[in-house]
Image (cartoon, rainbow, N blue to C red; front, side):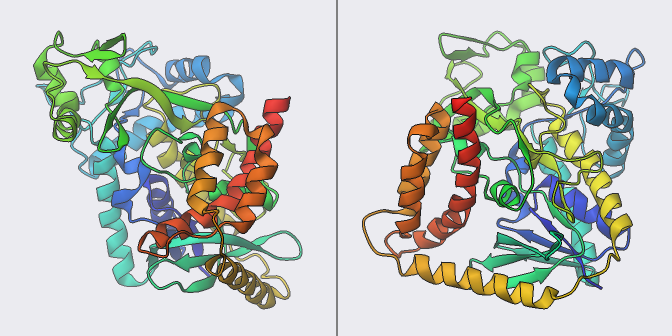
Length: 458
């Protein structure tokens, strides 16, 4: 039986794979990094749901729409209805949510929300969720229903003559192997393209190559320049890291670039964000409980992304998308308690849609299509490995990020595209794998760059 392919092993990818396996659909889970290193597992977000007696899905919906805008309502309404059951499911997975003295879930109120509806497991809710999902996936892998390809990157989509996605081409960074993988249903759980704007912010992130690939093959991308900022970013060890936004709800304020937590009661502070503050101390050597933290607001999450239908299908037949890769739930802005829940909710919708569609006619000439796609990838790989000259992939990617962050791509895009065509990997050392990974992202990221440049000129 031809499996479904899920690209990305963050929380959205893990949840989609699990939902597919629950529907008796075999899965290939393709991911650059194992789940422990996925961006979504390092978020401090909780999950919002209307659980209090004075709350309701309708009130939850009103709060979300007031922030995101009316276009997001068709996606947010079913989510708010499903959110309480999602929290109950996570409880059954033994996520260690914070509780009151009577044993009930402790609900916190976010800035801008009319009700207390955020549940957290300290500052590591996402990490706990990812670990539980990963443990369930391990059991399926042991039975053979799931095949994990960790350390592999998506290179291209394989479409038949009718424009239907039939699989992917991927590369293993450990061995260099290129492989065409057939798929009866493909889900992109690859996260957003926030890395395209991070020339001096967080640790190097994806340029949005998967989104660019989908765009190249006919998907639509909405609001690619819409990016939210994180207010509590601090620099340490050459990178920029985050403190939880939950600090806002606890009364934290920033004045003149300094975050002062000394006036907040330490007991709730330690319970809510203690590990994050300890990580800050280890990274900087300063105690955030008593010393002001130098912070700044920096790009953090894309609100735009792939356009999808109600069941998360993209405009490419046979391709779905979930999590940070899509724009559907976020609109103009979003609450921190939404992305995790939206990823889990979207995973179930996507898996059901793929399961319902399976068994579609395979189409004629699919095997030659895979062979041709793999040969094209091999030719491109040979080209980049043999490239000589002063231009490097890292330099082009850096300048692409800088132009996107400053809204100045229109003036430099043609030059960046020309530089990308002649760029080499670098010095050929162990860094070459990282440069190669970036290079596979670079060309499709330039597809997104064209959208950004058109938006600049509009």
